[in-house]
Image (cartoon, rainbow, N blue to C red):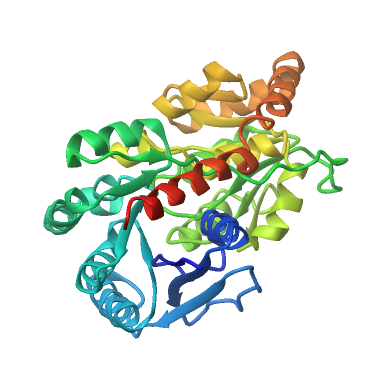
Length: 368
C-alpha cells in the first residue's frame, strides 16, 4: 500500500481541502497521514479515513514559528516511513524536499496559493527574498506539482519550468435541501478566515446603509478583534453577527441558509488576483449567489455559468450597491441561483477527485 504524507502549517481542524484530498486518497487505497501543528487553542480533531498528526511548537507565529515547525517537520519525516511526501505551499516544502532527497523518495508540491505574492509576504522584501530562494532551490528540481487554478498553473510553469496539474478546490456534491431556518431577514454570509485583504471592513461599513438584512461572519483570524470593534463603533451589533470558528461539517449545513455569499479579495498582490477560493465553489454548491471580484479566475468561471455578481473595484459603496442589487433585483437573483444549480453539477469533488487520483497514479507510475 503506497504511503503518502501531506504536510501543512495549520492545525488541521478547518482545512476542508486537505480533508477532502486525504479522504479520497485513503479510500483509493493509499495509506495517508496529514501533518499539521498543535496550537494552544486547537480543537479536538474529528476521526477521519486517514491518520492525522499535530506537531507541537512553542512559537505560534513569525519567523521563529516557521523555523521551529520546519525543524520539527524535518525530524518527523526523517523517521516516518513514506513513499511520497506532498508539501502544501512553500512553508512546508523545504523539509519535504530535503528528506525525500536523503531517503530516495518522492516530493510533490501542492501550491494552494502564490505564496511569495501573498500580502503578508509581498510587503516584507527581506521575507519575500527568503521564500523566493526556497522556491528556486526546490521547485525546479521536482517532477510532480499541482495547484488550484489554470492561471496559477501557467505562472508557475513559466517561472519554475515544470508542469503543474490543476486540481480545483471544489466541494463534495450536495443534494439540495429546503433552506434551513435561520434569521427572519436575508443573510449576507462570509465564511473563512478573518484576515487582512478580505474586504471585510468594507462589508461591515456597507451594512450601515443596508436595511432588512444581516451580515454573518463565520470564522476567526488576525482581524477578529478589529472587525468586532468596528461593528461596535458603528453601532451594528444587531446587524453584524460574528459566529466564530464553525467546523466544516456544520458549515455545510449553515451556508445554504444564506441569501448572498461574499468573497471580497483586495487586489493586493498576484496571489489574491489569481486566486480561486474554495468559498466561491462552496456558495455555488449551496445554490447561494455570491459577490466576487472581477479577477481572472472568477471571470472565467462566470463565462461558463453566470453564478457571481462581479465587482470591478472594492469599496464600501460598491459592496453596498452589489448587495442592494441582489436583494432588490429578483430576476437577476433567481437567474444566478438557477445557474448555481447547473454549475454544481460540473464543479464538484466527485469529478475533481478523478483528476487527483490520476495525478497520483502518474506519480507512482513514474518510478518515483
